[in-house]
Image (cartoon, rainbow, N blue to C red; front, top):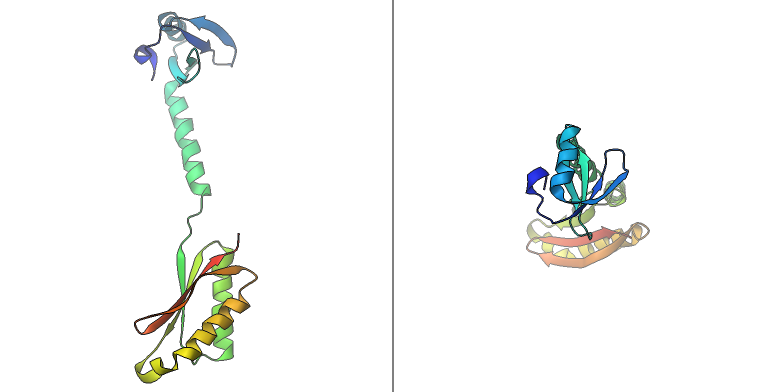
Length: 164
């Protein structure tokens, strides 16, 4: 709320340099602001009496948007990254997948470890479960199992989340 939109009987007024001008009616505060070619901006309506500041509203609004942009930039959303493999994976390839998962977990993302079966391979699901448990064991320093290995159609899936 700015200028004429401020509808309180009395407001506490703060000048541009931060000095308090005291408690006065909004009309009087508005004339002081107009003399300085600035706006009267309501800063806090929760206080008693409400606090208004004499500032350039356009600049004030720009600064607030800038702060909001910076806050959005700093927050990190956690994605789910997938690591796919087969149960007959060789040791080196397995280590590459573990390193990928570790990198994802360290950057704060969750990891979905998927083992795909083709044809009759689905009969060896116990081997796939052992592989996923081995992966969870290898990553236990940086991750915790969010969902244990389970069947989903022709895949076996396990979710890992970064440790807090």
